[in-house]
Image (cartoon, rainbow over all chains, first blue to last red; front, side, top):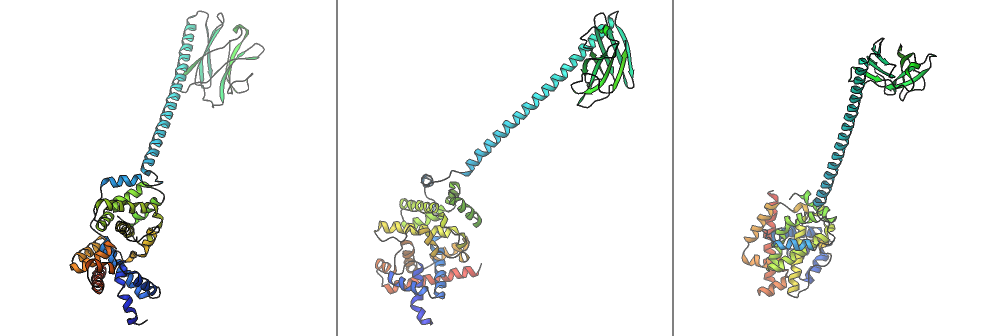
Length: 245
Length: 185
């Protein structure tokens, strides 16, 4: 296409870019544009100019009510994510706080339980100690020394009142699945269980009353072995000590 | 507002996020309303056109194609068509746009590469103000009133040839100013 063939179309491009070309001329130009790259480029240039020149005016704010009106007319609008997010965070925070409180309560409960156990053990020890002291004041109480390797102590025995207390120190530590078991020894060497005991790591000695279900005069001695936790019907572990009386 | 933010906001608007939409509204309503007010000259009608423009942004946000240009020129093209339609409705003239308005806006807005920042727009705005009143008058009637050259000739009482010549000359002056700004970047 020659330059002169372009002229009538090119003259109309600025008006077309503004949307001001009359319908008949616009149709002719559109037909020409379909086959003319240079005219299309020129049109793009004019459009760029006109849109930039006339659309970009100094800002003018509408009334504030418009924003609210518009908000009310948005179909299918999802409300603010931030609100949802705040809700989520609040719920998460509350959840975490509740969990922390529960954990704190559980911890406190376990602490109280441990202290109560410790207190009960101390009370037992005090009572056992008082019993031992009381027995020492009885004229018929016999004291039998115990000395076996590192284990030392005494057996206080009052056959008249059928009472006996073991006072021991230096008992070796045992595993959680083990326990010390006390045995009363009959003249025929038959053993009868007289109680279980586990020394406390924080106490220097242990005093343990003997649980005699029969008259102590029926027995000739007392011994101790290490048994599985829960105790045994008869001695199965190694002997820690034996005292004959 | 950085371009990347517009893209992210538009994506959220497509998903129905009202907050993202209001962020775009707060950012661009001043420009949109300035154009609708310039075209309609009546604050109440201009607010309605501004509202309709943003409702189109809400309902047709899927039509926005970031790779084809910035959001603001696309929005202003919609605003101009919406305002001109209202103007034609008031004057009982045929409307320009139809339901496909936001999609069709791509056909008339400049491509992304030819667009520029605020300073270029501002210098072009002043170039328009510097045009002689005859040149500015004919161009403004075309752009802001949506009149054809024949209608402009009738309104101004000028020969059609004079309108065409002045319109062409004014556009050529602005095009040169725009090109010069572009080369000075």
